[in-house]
Structures are given as C-alpha cells and as structure tokens.
Length: 217
Image (cartoon, rainbow, N blue to C red; front, side, top):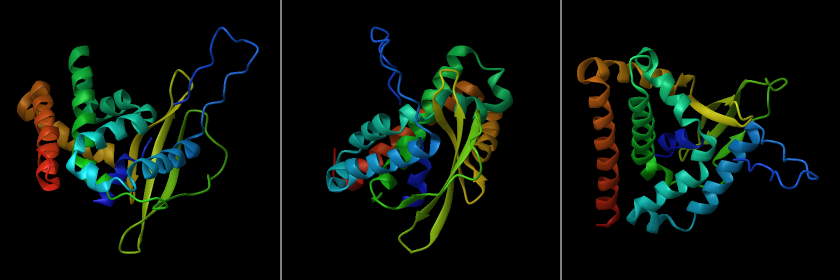
C-alpha cells in the first residue's frame, strides 16, 4: 500500500498582492522543496488519525486535494496520458477526463496513503544545476521491509512560473507512460466518453470498498 500511495507524494505559492508593490513577491518553491514540503505536510495530517481516516476515506481525499493537488499539473498529466487521443477529444472531454483521471487515482490510492509515516521519504541532493523548464526530483522511499524504493518526480515550470509535478517514475518506470498504453486500449474499445465513465466508476468503487473495510457507512 505504501508503495502505491507514494505515487501521489507529488506535488502553491501565493502571489504577492498588487496593492503592496513595496514588498517583493516570494520566490516560487524549488521542486525539491515542494516534494519535502508535501512529505512533511502529509505526515502531519495523517499520523495519529489513521483510524479515523480509514473509517472516513473522504477525509483522505480532502487531505490529498489540500496538500498534493496545488503542486500537481493535472491537466498536463492528463494530456500526456491521452497521447494522440488528446487531439481527437473536445475541450469538454479533456476537462472531464482530467478530473476523472485525478479522482480515480486519488480514490484508488487513498487507503495506501493512510499507512504513510514521517521520514519514509528521503529527498536526494540535486544532480547539477536546475534546468529552468523541466527537472527530476529523486527520492528514496523506505518500505516496511527495510528496503529502499527509488521514486522520482518529474516537474515542469508552468507559464505562471510555478513548478508542478506531472509524472512519477518508480524504479525507472514512468507512471504516465505505463498508464497511457492502458488508456489507448480502452479508448479504442469504449471511446473517450466510455473511458471517462469507467474512471468515475472505478474511483467511487475504491472509496466504497475502503469505507466497508474501515467500518464506515
């Protein structure tokens, strides 16, 4: 569960008020700072509340939305997953897929995230100077078995100047690339609208299962 949940240890900086030009706007967080911040905030929100979160998984989703979503480039990740099908989709379908894709993933891995503990993620030093457009943040994740898992986060700088994560690479395997092949097969079989409905159903089913296991209703 921990291994699965860490896919979502990815990834906001407040804008300076225009009415206060005498104060400089805060510099955007660097990608490594973002990953460390997410790891620390998740630990604070989860530790000591595991029983409650298992019984009320909707609260886990709220935590993910509050801590992870501001640092995750959901729309860009969805476009990468759609691949060539992104050109075929209408703007409304792309928006719907982006939301369904995010919801399905967060709902699916919510249970595993409850097992997350502080110190499980070690952010490794950057290798070389920071690229101004894209970069990889490398981490080591300590599993319950005592083994370390290599988990890297791909970041891009958005047009607004913020760094946001869009992919997770676990032991060298890109989640986006791996999931794209599954999506391609489903779209050819069911169409984009069929895929969206499938993702929506998948996410809801995962939360219902977690509620049953946690004793919730």
